[in-house]
Length: 287
Image 1 (tube, rainbow, N blue to C red):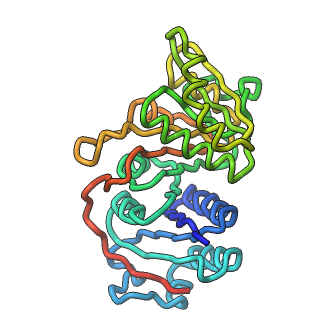
Image 2: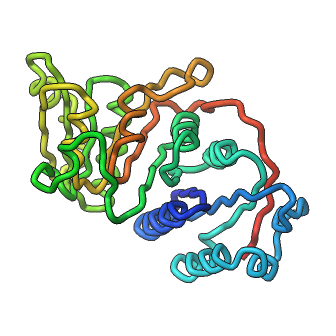
């Protein structure tokens, strides 16, 4: 049986929530969990000689040691690894994404944007769970503006990135038995028919997923914020410009990462390496 590899970075308060989300996902999909931790180059955990003794991990970083032990207890030791790195956090995580099926990180400024831009796999960005932070878009702050609470909401615009978002969104909704809402924001006529045509093949492929379709008039970012209020997951596609010219996400995906109050997934359109980044030093902790 194929087991997906889910990679997550830990560090800081929100990093532990990303770890919890990744652990839940690994449990739900029967996947493997690869935990990445970045520390200063002079940390005793960066041994340069392979495995870090578990006793040393418990001495130097007890919270991390407890988190690893809890993950192992839930998934089994053969499904959990820990890699300890020195170097830039974004480079470590992008490097780790090379052989991953999913990357799970905490929301946190430019590092989040860099990882979402350059990762080799879909990236899930987790925010602190409660309370939701206020957003610049008031319609996303109130329960009465939550038409798709509990849904997987997918932003659809007819582009290749939105096809990647639909693919990820339907697969996630099917795996977690969630309803899905395909949302298109436009000022152009004829959008409902175009949206239906784009979603139809995925409905055929995932007949057990309950699907709603919605078209909102206006600007894409505020519309997505309104649609995603209370959603289980908001899925957007990246710009997909290729590994060399691609330096930033599209403006909507960037805005979503900055303003969304819930968990966001960024789906990529290509399998090619996203960027040439230096490989940081790595030490494996065998549990």
